[in-house]
Image (tube, one colour):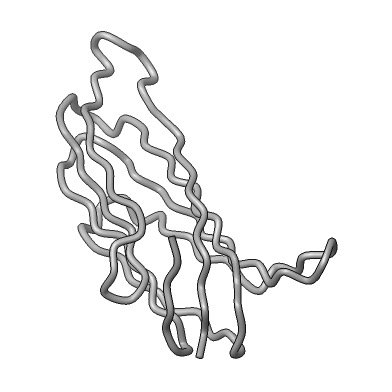
Length: 119
């Protein structure tokens, strides 16, 4: 999966359902042979907001983005849905159900990687 955009790079997290705390960390890496360099990180952790949007200023070039998504219980059981996007293109979408009654400390961690070209 790859995305192409201009700087500043816009990334967003959309959440639906109030049963889960969805947190995202997006690390942006500049491949440099064996010595990759981190170009920046974004944290999406306002769990009560339906939408979070942030920007990151990057130089022209090719990057790798690693997204780590933590889904944990908030207060109630029920469904959740989230979508992580670069610009207006969805990069990661998932849904499920959190049920702390049948599984205390119910939660999951997902990760995804994609290429990002900044023109």
